[in-house]
Image (cartoon, rainbow, N blue to C red; front, side):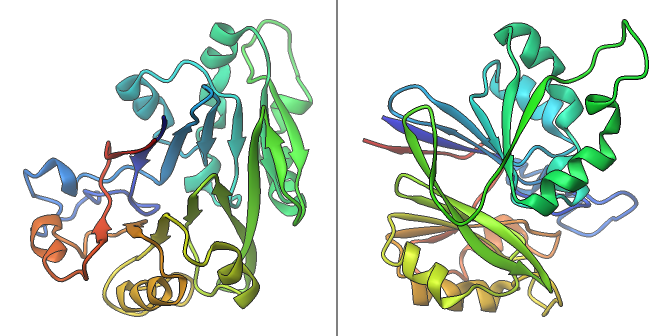
Length: 256
């Protein structure tokens, strides 16, 4: 059996937003609490794959007892998707090995620049993450025996990637998706796609655009992520088409 856990479903601000007193940020429904976006995929053969590692990773790892990671897939290098890299130090200690990190040339270049102390240590005795960077292109690759397919998309003008793992496609921060990518995931079992808010946005799908994308892909089921405090989970869920759902932190999907 394979599993996917939504570790975080919020935007770069998270929900609640600091200083905001809207009904969503003040909601007592735990489904309205959204940490920064990340997912944890556990395959049927025991391979454990993290998709993005934002600044809330320590909290997410403690909550879901994450002690092993076979590979980290980076969609792009914005801070809310890589800010937790320093937290893998304890995972390194438990695993007694470095962790493989996969991303595009641009994403890995940004990681080297922003986390320079990892690659150019300045002193002895300080703990630093042990990671090995692997540049990806358009071709599928393996983590253990699990095939991973990069999915080219655009975040505004920035080319980034989503990923297909088995029969799940995970896409976040998309504002447009090439037709070639749609062909790669058409009819997939499970689609995860960003839906920032109701209003249009220059670099993210809003809800209407996400639903239109789902119509084109025709998955068996779809889950919306990377949401602001625009959506009160219980009320907004009633607006969705059949087999489309707002994801929430801690939601776990399973496949036989």
